[in-house]
Image 1: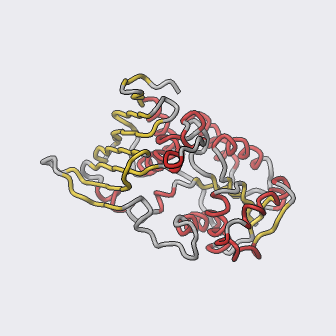
Image 2: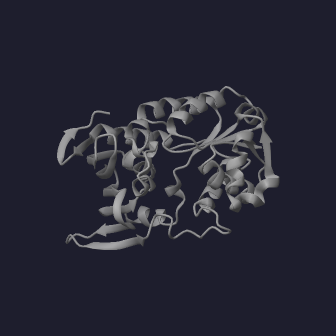
Image 3: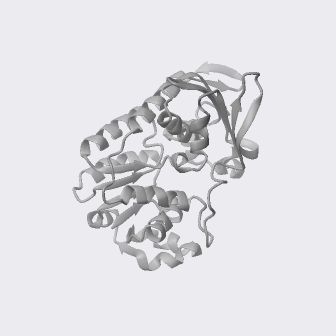
Length: 312
């Protein structure tokens, strides 16, 4: 049985993926019951839920765990889960921790534990990944435009604050950093972030480099007026050839049904990979953390129209 820690995305994302897509019985702390009842699209999974008094009981009864909490909280829960010999599989959210330094420490502990674990770098499971991989013989540019929920609503949430693992780089850009690391990129020629202040970056641009791959320029605007996700091949004459042109990164995926979150099918594939009887040990995550660290080290912040070395 799989325990879920997290009453937000843990319920509306991972619960249907595990219970519906993987046929798993899911252990949930009792305090999530009210939130569960407020989401009618989840009602059909009620018989696959085993309610537990608290987090401790859920973990005691589980052989696997999904941690869908803030990076600071996830960094607290991972060591506690690794102390429990019954927990043999862990599915973790990105970023792994609020800084690349802390993420590297946790990753070393996870690797040493011998447990099976996966990180939700969901872009690696999307259909356009192969288009990008094939295009990397020549220069490529990726442009992602959207308006994050916290900007649309004026919500002061951790997801907008760089220091705790949010912001355009650590919360959104980490998806592309991980994917590019998997595809062979190991360095960044330049990286710039900007926003209202250094702790609330909304835009990020970088140029990635690596052996046997052409340069890849990335631009993300999480406070944009429009919504788009584009991958273009840059031709020798400077013109661009459109390769992927979507409303958002998940736009080409099969839609979810019954009012479920559109990311549920991708999460289902991730969960099935974690739960397969002969699941292979995780690899490649070390490279993604190293590239993340390099990006952070090279990133300059443009604050209020001025450029300054980043002090995080």
